[in-house]
Image (cartoon, rainbow, N blue to C red; front, top):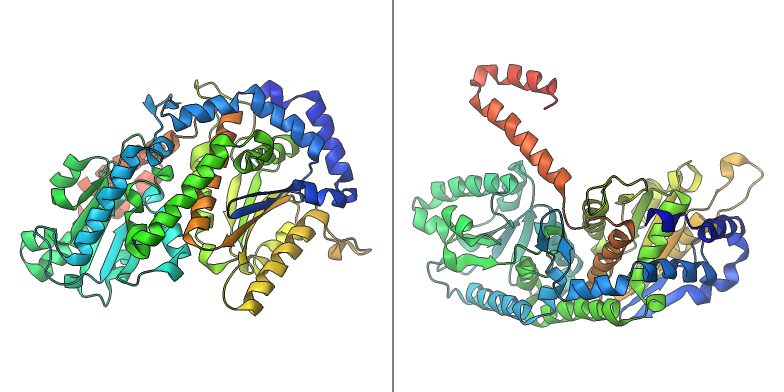
Length: 501
C-alpha cells in the first residue's frame, strides 16, 4: 500500500487540485451521492472526478470487493488475535435473528415482570453500565432516538469507575423499581466490576438479602459463566459472540438497551436502516459506494495532504453523542503503526478525531479552524427534516452550509487578522431525519468507512493492543497501592509517579 500511495500521477493530482480547487465550484453537482436516507456532498475537498477515478483504482488494486465478501461471509480474520471478525456476518444471518429473538423475550419479560427470581414491582428505571464499545454506540443511539422512546423506562448510562457517576444516576430513584444492566464482553473489565461490587453493597444495605439483590442485576456478555460467578442469574444474561469486536457491537445483544428505549417496532426500523447500508456497501459499485468514497477521501486528506486532524460536527442536538462514538471506532480501530503482519509502516493512519455539536462548535474551536495554523478535515452532519421548529431547523442547516463553505473556500481580506485562509476540506453528510432508520444508516456507513481505511493502510482495524497494555500496567500499580498501609498510600503513589514499568 505504501508504494501505491506514492503513485506519481496521484501526487501530481494532489498538487493540482489544491492549487485550483477554488476555480472548480461548478463541479459540485457531480460530487453528491445518495443512498436510502443518507446523502453526502464531497465537493468541498481537493478532488475532482478524474482524481476520484484514480483513487478508485487503489480500491480495485487491493481487491476491496474480495475483502468485503470475506467480511460478510465470516471469513475475515483478525490475524493478531487469530479469530474471525463476525459482527457483519452475524447481523445478516440466522444467528443474528436468534439474538434479536432472545432480546425480544427478555424485553417482554421485563415489561411484564414475568422473569423467574425477579422483583414484583414494575420496573421504571434502568441503569446501563458499560465502557468503550459497550457504552458509546448504545448511548449514542439511545440519545439520538429519545423522541422515539416508548417512555416505559427512565434510562441512564454509566461508564466511569469513579462511583460518583453511579451515585448521580441512582439519586432520587426507587431502587425497588430499578434494574442494572452490566455490559462487558469479557466480564472482567475492571470499571464494570468496580461498579458491580459498589451497587451490590448499596442494594444489600437496602434489601439485606443477596437473593433480592440478584433480582435487580442483568448482564450482557460473551462469557456467561464468568457473569454467573459474579452473581448474575443465568436467566438475566444476554450473550453475544466473542468474535464481535467491542466497538462494532452496537448491533449485537448490546443493542438491548436500545430496544428497551424505543420498543420493538422502532428497533426493527433501526436494524433495517443498518442492513440497507450494509447491502449498499456490499453490492454497489465502487464509484457510487458511499462508505468507500468517504474512506478514499479520508486517505486522500491524510496521506496526500498530511491532514492529521478530523473534526466531526453534527448540526443537530440529538446527534451530539455521535462524536465520541466516531472518535472511538476511528481511533481505536485505525490508530496503528504496524501492518497486519506486525511490520512497522511509514505512513500516517488514523487522524486525531474531535468535535462538538453545531452551532456550539462555532463558539469554541472554529476560530482556530478558520484562522489557525493547523489543517483540519471535517464531517458536517446535518438533518434535512431536523425538528418541528422550522426557525431552529433552518438556522442550523444554514450555519452548517456556511461553515463548510468558509472552511474550504476561505475569505480574502487586505488585513491578515481578518483573512480566513480556507483549505480545510469537508464532507457534508445529510440524514433525512433523526429517525431509527436513518440512524441505522449512519452507524453502518461509518463502520464500513473505517473498515475500508484499514484495508487501504493494510492494518488490523479489529485489535487494540495499546488498550490492553495500559490495563496490564495499571493492574500492577493497583496491586502495589492496595498492598500498602493506609498511612503509606501517599508515599507509594509518589513513588509510582517515578516508575516507568
